[in-house]
Length: 198
Figure 1 (tube, rainbow, N blue to C red):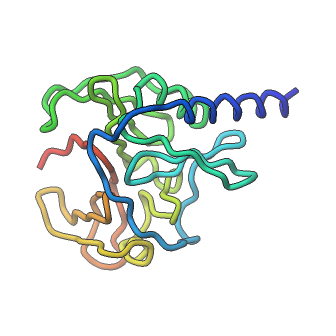
Figure 2: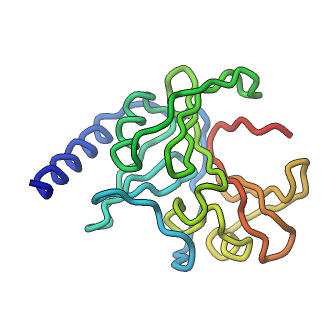
């Protein structure tokens, strides 16, 4: 019965992703990535996992490794349904009207991943310190990864001192490191539209 329920859930999950329409509201170039097995693994519930991407999120089937993209621009209800099936029920939606990009709705998941929406469309995601070791890109980079991990996984990484600290960008992925050296660890991370106050 459990196997049947998991199979049906996976079929529903991929049906929802496959039916999605929409263009990203904030275009982001996919970073050039190399395998980075030492980084944290994507968090998983049942037979699927979430992986972070510069253009949205990936739902990855653990048994086959096949994946489906949840692009920025998809409807909020669809995205929340899909991601909740993998990561668990989210906290109630909250809104920040003071973001530089305009009013943003936030849906926080139990694993430290927060989804950002504008006009009921998926426009970004962010990770906080609670996500350390629980969420990552397909190349293994997430909160808790070091600057050395980041440089090994992505080309064209830029790091600069801002009011946030050691802020980095890597092909559409952004975040803040806790120190200037190669051992500095990622404290927060985001892609797409953000609500970061500098």
